[in-house]
Length: 249
Image (cartoon, rainbow, N blue to C red; front, side, top):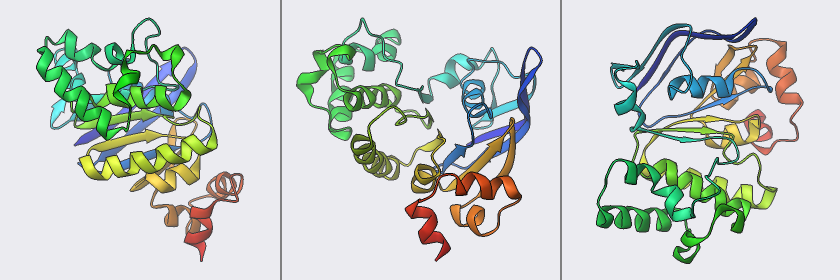
């Protein structure tokens, strides 16, 4: 579904992303983890075309991302930025339907899709007319996810989608999102700094440092066969972690 071939990105003198290659299979959830500043968010912005890579190529469903193909490919991707990124001057309904309106979907089609997504995300219809400032953190995040899913994209890119939520709301949304991923069969690239969350969601975990991949594999691989001492240190720093304890037993 997605191939990253030797892509890199530099901001002035800072190498944000080392030459980087990765392949994500259709229906797979890949979770990128690592300390702040390791290049996780930069990677997603390159895939969406918000940034241009300095080298390499990004291939989505056998089509290379370029200025000529970006417009069409971007419509096949759903993207949730950190803290949701809702437009504060638009209602929840207008936020969710902004791209559908831009693409001139008819009202019946938009209404049907909104109804479908409201049910999927367990978002009460009466809240759709509220503005983001009138919604709770969990409700805003549901709206952000609905917006990302509006065009029924094949690829979902989620940048710390639950990072700003309190633990109870975060736990509930984790459960719901996992069910949605399984139900819809989307290809998902998720960024988090929380290895327990990564273990919960990920088919594959990719641990990054200084813009490069240190190790990738299942959570058991990272715990039982760390590639280097940094892997052990990163895991140890986040304990206690139920997913990690279970995998060690």
